[in-house]
Amino acid sequence: MALLTRDAILQAQDLPTEQVSVPEWGGEVLVRGLTGADRDDFEQSIAEQKGKNVKMNLRNVRAKLVALTVVDEDGNRLFSDKDAEVLGRKSAVALNRVFEVAQKLSGLTPEDVDELAKN
View 1 (cartoon, rainbow, N blue to C red):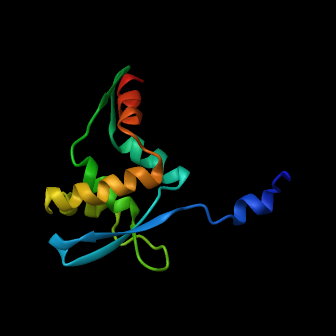
View 2 (spheres, rainbow, N blue to C red; view 1 turned 30 degrees about the vertical axis):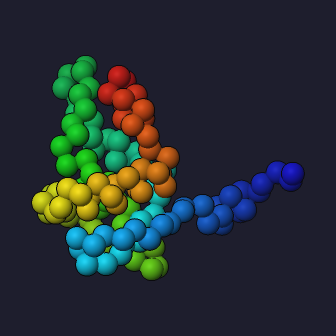
View 3 (cartoon, rainbow, N blue to C red; view 1 turned 90 degrees about the vertical axis):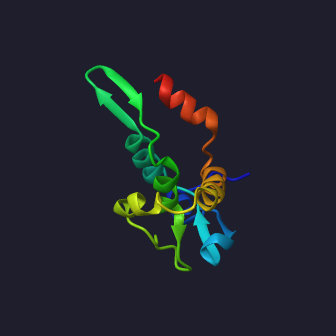
């Protein structure tokens, strides 16, 4: 197998997508895996630092991830970070369905969240 070049890596289309049926919302959404920067932002958004202690704040975590990962056909996010608050008021069943696909596509596991809590 040949070694990759810088250009080959930067041009690789490596963000998986999956259509998710959300009958509660009347259709389907396109979910894309997180970029490295988006994953860092997401992890930072659920960590609260108080002095030397870091505590996990899982409030609205599903809506935050959904806001980061639901995209249009061109790969543009449908929601801003600020929309997470409003999204959090939508059906828990619908949010969780999209959240689980976003987790899978982004390589986020429950163990990752546990690891963040420990660190």
